[in-house]
Length: 115
Image (cartoon, rainbow, N blue to C red; front, side, top):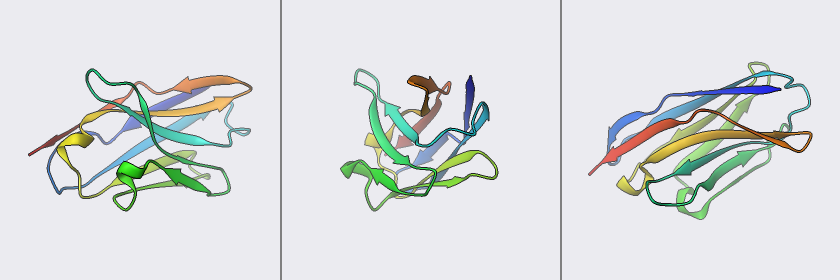
């Protein structure tokens, strides 16, 4: 079992920044990849960025150059630094990991970017 708790969402003006955090607890020693997803109203959930335990990353084209995913293995926490935010980044952001074939999701944190 893995528990994921996100924090750091909020309301920000276009061009601003936010940093999301996702703290993992439970059976986390075998976790490799942790990822951030987002879901805007009326849209499908989409991958934003992912990071392996070793630090390899990938991100969606829509956020490249603006968002940075990082990880502190000692704190079992993954971060998403979001800069130059746009109104189209407005969504609920979810942390996700997979362990032994089972997907674990956090409860989500709302990010709202005003124009």
